[in-house]
Length: 314
Image 1 (tube, rainbow, N blue to C red):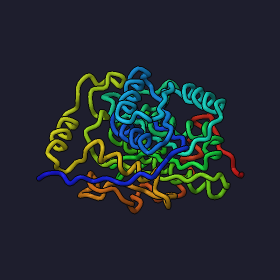
Image 2 (cartoon, rainbow, N blue to C red):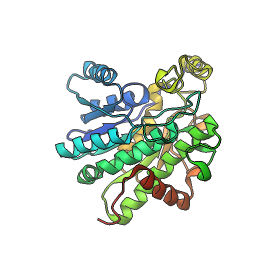
Image 3 (cartoon, one colour):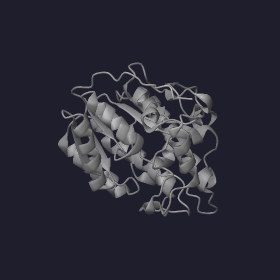
Image 4 (cartoon, rainbow, N blue to C red):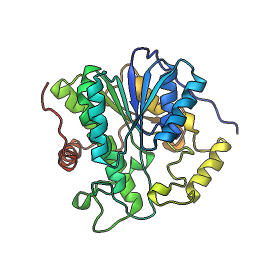
């Protein structure tokens, strides 16, 4: 059965500045491309500068008027995150859109970040938490929309409160789910705190469904020398328009969360069977995202773990 093409209209973003993490390939690159095509000035913080420059050039080739730049960022290093924050604050340009998209999934063995955190929690959640904190003055200046990309895996699972870094026992998939639940709780709590403290920013969360990205592909940096069986199956299904989406369709919920005019504290994802593909739209919050108490507890722990803080008032 041929796939039904789905798309959304991205509004004119001329004069807006967007920061998109994980934009050197996959869904992040698709989001950055669409934002640049709509007129936004797009900054792509990347771990691999050469790969990031190739991605930026790809955007320019398709959209010659695009304004795209890259900066160095390793989300698994709080020092790297702080350095980028310092550089951008020195530049002083307001940020209107922040898309916390980058992520790591299922390393074969437990790994840690430069700061000793379990790598999925440290990269997917703590790195973005710290980045958002460091960029808060620029986000406030731009009355920004922040979008944090969670995962369909976060539909179930929980936070391992007694061992957030999985030091006592390690189970890779529950650890991944925890990291993406943390991303969702952070994005929702960010919107609540912005309202309470009058920061002037809005925050949404989104998930891309399932698509043939590099998340489960060979990634030597996380100890995976070959593509996983799962990503080979996903590619096969995607080529045939079955059950899963494409990279472009998987980017649409994040684009909607970032540009929908009424979005604030909302959750977007594919509307097809199992929420793995299909037209993007708003979701009801999944059970792991519903606890305000969990969100507040996670926020406090995240500030402590990253050594960052958010103001409590305007």
